[in-house]
Image (cartoon, rainbow, N blue to C red):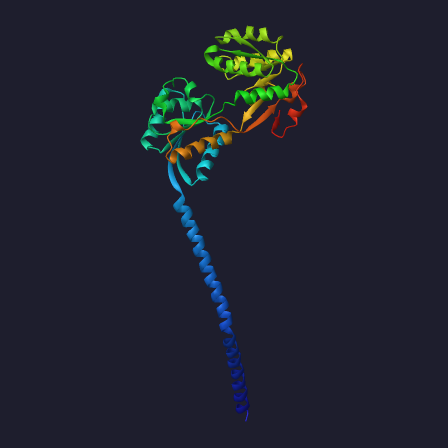
Length: 353
């Protein structure tokens, strides 16, 4: 009596379970279709991603790059970053070997021999010394320089341009026209600009500046020197007869010792100085245009991309800076006899010291 009801209950429960399973199995095709559609969509998505990655990988070209630095400086590292970004943005992936030049000729030769043995597709020279040394020794591998104060034809020992058909690059020379425009805007009442020059170094630049100044109603007053010992007399001859002093990139004039003397004497006389860079502004010059070092590297990288695409370096014009900041020494500004125009200080690209 008791077992039958139990069996009946058990059968009833089992029937209910089968019923539940049956109900679930009846609704599963729709759920399964949804799952299947999701799975198919996911497969297509993954295939698309893999195809895109494969296209990116196949579009990336590896380049053996040798980098020579004159010194291990933060500015050179910024230029290197800009150079690499220009290559990578156009599908090149550089495999880099980097060396920093030593002080002795033997150190230089060992570094350059290592680069020759590596047989790079391209050489990047960071700094004037690196550019000079590698250009003297390597005539075949394309060389792109960056962070160089002089153009190729002005580098010491580099005079035969046809033999340097494998070299081009980006220099740090801010165009004289741009500097003169900044001087005129900064000192609208100034009429007499003074410079000190070694004719063996910067006569061509002085001639260009004189012509531009005359066209703008300004007078350029020049003191010529042939060695560092003549600089004190040249400064004293100028300090009472000029409104602004303009530093030109002259190796005879701007030695560390003479630069300190020029800045000290002209500050005493209240004469504002247009320096070469922010380093001179920190030392006491009133203002200077500074390059964007990363963009200088990027310019070199853009030249490198064109070389890797097959264009000979000799057909590529060396570039000048295209992005600037203006460094201003606010303390020195207070001691000048020629006022600095306020609008210059308010510019967004001004860096105050």
